[in-house]
Image (cartoon, rainbow, N blue to C red; front, side, top):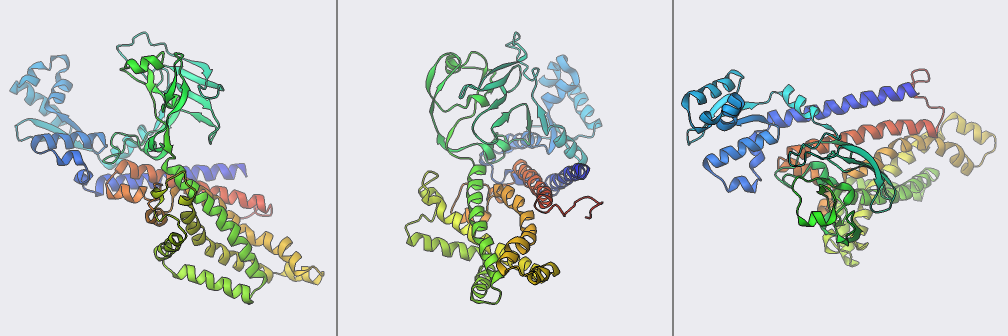
Amino acid sequence: MKRYVLTRILKSILSIFAVVSIVIVMIYTMIPSDKVFDNDAGAKKMKGDQLVTYKMRKLKELGYQDYASINEMCIATFGDNAKACSDGDEAARSQAVDKYASKGYAINTLKSGEPYAVHKYRWYELLGRFYSKLLVIDNVNAIKDEENPDLERKYYWGKNPYNGTPALLCSGCTYKYQLYFDGSFPFIHQNKFRLDFGTSFPTSQGVPTLQVINEGQGPNKKVEQNFETGLTEQSALIQTSCQYKFKTDHLDEKRFNDHYASCLSYHESPSMVQTSYTLGLIALVIAYAMGIPLGILMAQNKDKLVDKVGIAYINLLIAVPSLAFIFFMRSIGTLFGLPDKFPQLGFNDIRSYIMPVLILALLQTPSLMMWLRRYMIDQSNADYVKFARAKGLSQGEIFRSHILKNAIIPIVNGIPASIILCISGALITESAFAVPGMGKMLPDAIKTTNNNMVITLVFIFTTLSILSVLIGDILMTVVDPRISLTEKGGK
């Protein structure tokens, strides 16, 4: 079993990399790079050489190409002796340009006559650059600050400033708090290893994509905090997120004894991930609490009134378009004084959650009811059921102790996927209620050509999907030990 799980994990990793690689190549080679700037307000304010230079630098930053201005070509060619080239010496400039041209760079010219070099990355270069910087490992030599040559470089034990629990700290790393504990899931947190998918663009410009997804929303929330200098004040800073700051100001010096003063902030509202997961998980619990008992009841009363009403309910919800059902239910909700838009009452009012959660739950119940009914009816015709009846077991005992145990196995297989993929949000429901969750993130990222965000979300969703399938298979063996995933016991 261990060998099987290890093999599945390795295959899963390869599958994730294959999917992400295909998406990267498609995005960077099949979509015109100029579409990146269609929703960029900054680019719309520029023209001429300023616009060309801005686009070249931004495309370099986003990983489309390598770009060098004439000054950068001069420095790369002549090093410390680049002044003559930069000042306009034609022979020196020609030598710098020829050097880049010999490397395969395309040489273009601005309207001002200034040359610049561009090398558009091939598909294998795109993948190599992406994966080479994907995993970032923080270390004591990460910070290079010429103005702080005496920076001490070490790991040491300290305390979480919020709860006093032990924390592993670092001087010289990008993040001060490398490992710490608190009461929020997953309870053990670290900044030693992180994935770098680049920054978001054109929306949330300059912010790492994972930060956009995980950071809270709304205004900053200030709480009373004690800082290492002894200062106590109302602050929104999250001290365990602090990174090294090269230029500190007076306020930083009042709070901190070192340069670790660039911190994230608490927000009044939860992140997009937390919002979607909260809605999805509550809806999932309700769906299973409704769907499984109703499915069992229908199977136990096959072709009777309960079964016919259940089948009518299933057919109705399957036949009616989801969008129409959502708007119909939203209209009903307004009759009871419930908001038709999530932001009307906000995160802190339970009424904001009622209709989105109820709709998500109702949309999931038909498939649960239908499949559980079908599995139980199929099992009821099996030989072991006939044998149980011959032994004199009641219909209720047969359903509870035998049929349900076998029929529930396929349902159990899908539970991990249902739980894990709550994180992805529900596109139509969240759009209809203007819920600030994950549901619209991928379509919006595609629409605005936010390539780094698209790649980040594809990576997350692919990883979660593959992981949920593996967990579902393992969970089946726990529910029914007769099932073996190894070749010895069957496939």
